[in-house]
Length: 238
Image (cartoon, rainbow, N blue to C red; front, side, top):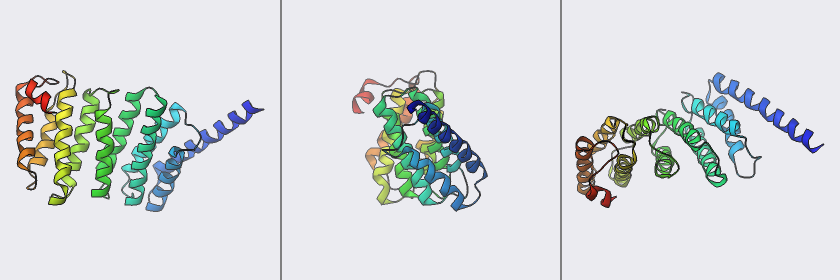
């Protein structure tokens, strides 16, 4: 029967997820990591069978483990970014809940990836794109958990992206995202983690005068205003 076929398919996929979880933990070589990441990525591609709630969370959790693996290579890192992008797109299109849980685990996977030495400028740009889209999404709120993950990832990006004229716009965007986060963060959140991001950006000799002014103004506002609030003129600028 149709119901029986669906149940068998679900059981087979659950078994494969379990084997992939074990393979993720056991992976020691680039080829082993790539095999796991590629299969996880295939689960997220358009046209593949619709994922259940727990399957999405399992995939994100395994992606987080693979992202932190020292044997990861750049092509696999890009697959992780693409898989996270696909999952976030599916969550948005299907209006799947709980959004905060998906976004939190996606942000954790990106944070793990940003800390991997194999990641370079191209991957950092993909990570920042996803991080920015999550931060700007009206369905989530920046509680202490999300704020910590976002700032940790931004700091890693800012410290590892080459400080060159070719990345001036990129550093501008990091400051813009920090301004947005300052305006949106919940009142109870300690914003001190943002100083580490801004300190790293300020150390780049290629940022423009306008960006530097915004950076200094943001530092002033964090010091002078309760978290989550900003002067009217700053809010108007954003």
